[in-house]
Length: 203
Image (cartoon, rainbow, N blue to C red; front, side, top):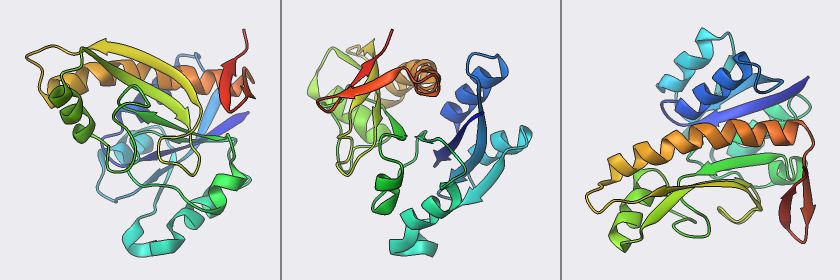
Protein backbone atom coordinates (compact mmCIF):
# COMPACT_ATOMS: atom_id res chain seq x y z
CA UNK A 1 0.00 0.00 0.00
CA UNK A 2 1.33 3.44 -0.96
CA UNK A 3 1.48 5.55 2.19
CA UNK A 4 1.62 9.33 2.57
CA UNK A 5 2.13 11.91 5.28
CA UNK A 6 0.18 15.14 4.87
CA UNK A 7 1.58 18.32 6.43
CA UNK A 8 -0.82 21.18 7.19
CA UNK A 9 -0.93 24.56 8.89
CA UNK A 10 -4.60 25.49 8.84
CA UNK A 11 -8.11 24.38 7.94
CA UNK A 12 -7.01 21.39 5.92
CA UNK A 13 -9.24 21.74 2.86
CA UNK A 14 -6.53 20.21 0.67
CA UNK A 15 -6.23 17.38 3.19
CA UNK A 16 -9.97 16.86 2.85
CA UNK A 17 -9.66 16.67 -0.93
CA UNK A 18 -7.11 13.85 -0.52
CA UNK A 19 -9.31 12.02 2.01
CA UNK A 20 -12.27 12.30 -0.37
CA UNK A 21 -10.22 11.01 -3.31
CA UNK A 22 -9.07 7.98 -1.29
CA UNK A 23 -12.57 7.20 -0.05
CA UNK A 24 -14.02 7.45 -3.56
CA UNK A 25 -11.29 5.06 -4.79
CA UNK A 26 -9.71 7.65 -7.09
CA UNK A 27 -6.38 7.04 -5.33
CA UNK A 28 -5.16 3.72 -3.97
CA UNK A 29 -3.19 4.93 -0.97
CA UNK A 30 -3.37 5.50 2.77
CA UNK A 31 -2.78 8.66 4.79
CA UNK A 32 -0.44 7.27 7.44
CA UNK A 33 -0.25 10.51 9.43
CA UNK A 34 -1.10 14.20 9.44
CA UNK A 35 1.55 16.56 10.83
CA UNK A 36 0.54 20.09 11.77
CA UNK A 37 2.57 23.16 12.67
CA UNK A 38 0.11 24.21 15.41
CA UNK A 39 -2.17 22.42 17.86
CA UNK A 40 -5.31 24.46 17.22
CA UNK A 41 -5.86 23.86 13.51
CA UNK A 42 -9.12 22.55 12.11
CA UNK A 43 -7.27 20.18 9.79
CA UNK A 44 -6.64 17.94 12.81
CA UNK A 45 -10.39 17.58 13.29
CA UNK A 46 -10.69 16.37 9.70
CA UNK A 47 -7.94 13.81 10.32
CA UNK A 48 -9.44 12.56 13.59
CA UNK A 49 -12.84 12.02 11.95
CA UNK A 50 -11.11 9.48 9.72
CA UNK A 51 -8.96 7.90 12.45
CA UNK A 52 -5.72 9.29 11.04
CA UNK A 53 -2.82 9.73 13.48
CA UNK A 54 -1.89 13.36 14.10
CA UNK A 55 1.31 15.00 15.32
CA UNK A 56 2.22 18.58 16.21
CA UNK A 57 5.68 19.73 15.14
CA UNK A 58 6.28 23.45 15.56
CA UNK A 59 9.36 25.60 15.26
CA UNK A 60 8.89 27.13 18.69
CA UNK A 61 9.40 23.71 20.31
CA UNK A 62 11.96 22.15 17.96
CA UNK A 63 13.86 25.16 16.59
CA UNK A 64 16.64 24.06 14.23
CA UNK A 65 15.63 20.41 14.78
CA UNK A 66 12.19 21.09 13.25
CA UNK A 67 12.80 19.31 9.93
CA UNK A 68 14.69 16.50 11.67
CA UNK A 69 11.66 15.79 13.87
CA UNK A 70 9.45 15.46 10.81
CA UNK A 71 12.02 13.12 9.28
CA UNK A 72 12.00 11.06 12.47
CA UNK A 73 8.21 10.68 12.23
CA UNK A 74 8.11 9.83 8.53
CA UNK A 75 11.29 7.87 7.70
CA UNK A 76 10.50 4.27 6.80
CA UNK A 77 6.78 4.84 7.31
CA UNK A 78 5.64 6.74 4.21
CA UNK A 79 6.41 6.77 0.49
CA UNK A 80 5.54 10.42 -0.06
CA UNK A 81 5.29 13.63 1.98
CA UNK A 82 2.57 16.03 0.85
CA UNK A 83 2.74 19.68 1.90
CA UNK A 84 -0.91 20.74 1.77
CA UNK A 85 -0.92 24.36 2.90
CA UNK A 86 2.10 23.81 5.15
CA UNK A 87 3.72 27.20 5.80
CA UNK A 88 7.09 26.14 7.21
CA UNK A 89 10.14 25.39 5.06
CA UNK A 90 11.71 21.93 5.23
CA UNK A 91 15.51 21.85 5.36
CA UNK A 92 18.43 19.48 5.83
CA UNK A 93 18.45 15.69 5.84
CA UNK A 94 14.77 15.24 5.07
CA UNK A 95 15.36 16.68 1.59
CA UNK A 96 17.99 13.99 0.96
CA UNK A 97 16.04 11.11 2.48
CA UNK A 98 12.91 12.07 0.56
CA UNK A 99 14.53 13.30 -2.64
CA UNK A 100 11.74 13.64 -5.26
CA UNK A 101 9.34 12.24 -2.66
CA UNK A 102 8.03 15.52 -1.24
CA UNK A 103 5.45 17.60 -3.10
CA UNK A 104 3.94 20.99 -2.34
CA UNK A 105 0.86 22.83 -3.60
CA UNK A 106 1.51 26.52 -4.27
CA UNK A 107 -1.29 29.01 -5.01
CA UNK A 108 0.20 30.57 -8.15
CA UNK A 109 1.68 29.58 -11.48
CA UNK A 110 5.33 29.02 -10.57
CA UNK A 111 7.78 30.65 -11.34
CA UNK A 112 5.54 33.69 -10.86
CA UNK A 113 4.56 34.88 -7.36
CA UNK A 114 6.60 32.36 -5.41
CA UNK A 115 9.71 32.05 -3.28
CA UNK A 116 10.51 33.18 0.28
CA UNK A 117 7.67 35.06 1.98
CA UNK A 118 5.12 34.24 -0.72
CA UNK A 119 2.39 32.18 0.90
CA UNK A 120 -1.34 32.28 1.59
CA UNK A 121 -3.18 35.51 0.86
CA UNK A 122 0.13 37.32 0.23
CA UNK A 123 0.38 35.46 -3.07
CA UNK A 124 -3.10 36.49 -4.20
CA UNK A 125 -2.54 40.09 -3.08
CA UNK A 126 0.61 40.23 -5.22
CA UNK A 127 -1.21 38.70 -8.19
CA UNK A 128 -4.00 41.29 -8.02
CA UNK A 129 -1.57 44.17 -7.55
CA UNK A 130 0.38 43.11 -10.64
CA UNK A 131 -2.63 43.27 -12.94
CA UNK A 132 -2.09 39.86 -14.53
CA UNK A 133 -5.14 38.31 -16.17
CA UNK A 134 -4.48 34.71 -15.14
CA UNK A 135 -3.23 32.93 -12.03
CA UNK A 136 -3.61 29.39 -10.78
CA UNK A 137 -1.86 26.75 -8.73
CA UNK A 138 1.15 24.47 -9.05
CA UNK A 139 2.08 21.08 -7.62
CA UNK A 140 5.85 20.82 -7.54
CA UNK A 141 8.52 18.66 -5.98
CA UNK A 142 10.37 20.14 -3.01
CA UNK A 143 14.09 20.76 -2.99
CA UNK A 144 16.46 23.14 -1.18
CA UNK A 145 15.24 26.15 -3.19
CA UNK A 146 11.91 27.56 -1.95
CA UNK A 147 9.29 26.74 -4.61
CA UNK A 148 12.17 25.72 -6.89
CA UNK A 149 11.63 22.00 -7.45
CA UNK A 150 10.40 20.33 -10.63
CA UNK A 151 6.86 21.31 -11.63
CA UNK A 152 4.43 18.38 -11.83
CA UNK A 153 0.97 19.87 -12.48
CA UNK A 154 -0.50 23.32 -12.98
CA UNK A 155 -4.03 24.64 -13.37
CA UNK A 156 -5.05 28.11 -14.57
CA UNK A 157 -7.83 30.42 -13.34
CA UNK A 158 -8.85 33.87 -14.60
CA UNK A 159 -8.16 36.95 -12.51
CA UNK A 160 -11.05 39.42 -12.66
CA UNK A 161 -10.64 43.16 -12.29
CA UNK A 162 -12.98 43.22 -9.29
CA UNK A 163 -11.26 40.34 -7.48
CA UNK A 164 -9.82 40.75 -4.02
CA UNK A 165 -7.37 38.30 -2.47
CA UNK A 166 -10.13 36.19 -0.91
CA UNK A 167 -12.28 35.81 -4.03
CA UNK A 168 -9.20 34.84 -6.02
CA UNK A 169 -8.06 32.46 -3.27
CA UNK A 170 -11.41 30.68 -3.39
CA UNK A 171 -11.20 30.20 -7.16
CA UNK A 172 -7.63 28.91 -6.95
CA UNK A 173 -8.47 26.56 -4.04
CA UNK A 174 -11.09 24.82 -6.15
CA UNK A 175 -8.35 23.91 -8.62
CA UNK A 176 -5.93 22.94 -5.84
CA UNK A 177 -8.47 20.40 -4.62
CA UNK A 178 -8.42 18.80 -8.07
CA UNK A 179 -4.72 18.71 -8.93
CA UNK A 180 -3.25 17.72 -5.56
CA UNK A 181 -5.03 14.33 -5.43
CA UNK A 182 -4.25 13.90 -9.14
CA UNK A 183 -0.54 14.45 -8.43
CA UNK A 184 -0.56 11.87 -5.63
CA UNK A 185 -2.25 9.38 -7.94
CA UNK A 186 0.41 9.88 -10.66
CA UNK A 187 3.26 9.41 -8.18
CA UNK A 188 1.65 6.40 -6.49
CA UNK A 189 1.29 4.74 -9.90
CA UNK A 190 4.95 5.44 -10.83
CA UNK A 191 3.95 7.64 -13.74
CA UNK A 192 6.63 10.30 -13.21
CA UNK A 193 10.18 10.35 -14.51
CA UNK A 194 12.78 13.09 -14.19
CA UNK A 195 14.68 14.32 -17.24
CA UNK A 196 17.08 17.29 -17.07
CA UNK A 197 15.55 18.41 -13.78
CA UNK A 198 12.01 18.39 -15.16
CA UNK A 199 9.17 16.04 -14.25
CA UNK A 200 7.68 14.12 -17.17
CA UNK A 201 4.32 12.38 -16.88
CA UNK A 202 4.40 8.91 -18.44
CA UNK A 203 1.24 8.14 -20.38
